[in-house]
Image (cartoon, rainbow, N blue to C red; front, side, top):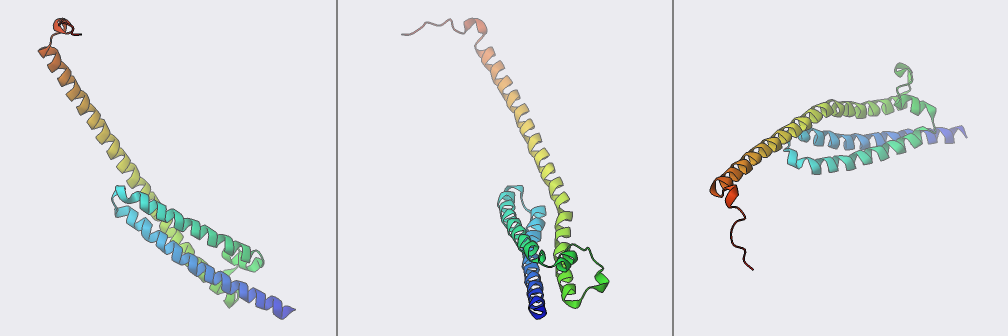
Length: 166
């Protein structure tokens, strides 16, 4: 019975390491997209955001699988949650810890880029609003000039005094 339990634990550890490696690949793709968002034209943000959203959903799905498997063995959950003495963990769990830390390192880099993207989007938004405001002011100016030209060409007293045709 102990051998069966040990085999199950080892199987779970191997599954989690595999899932963490898959998740690392997904987060690497997310990191690349996030990096592109720093330089890409704002018009191209929509497809990047959509692709990034799909990848985030995939990462969350993998995280759920990891959570279900680690729920069976508290030691795995403790390692994944950094709730144990990392200097005293067995080699098999150390591999889980290392794989987990690789994923967390990528997530941290993504988080650090998020603020730059937010600031860039705000700057782009402000530039667009200023452009719209400028267009509105110039449109009002053009409309005002047109109105004055029409009033000069057709004084108020003459407007509407012509013969009516049936």
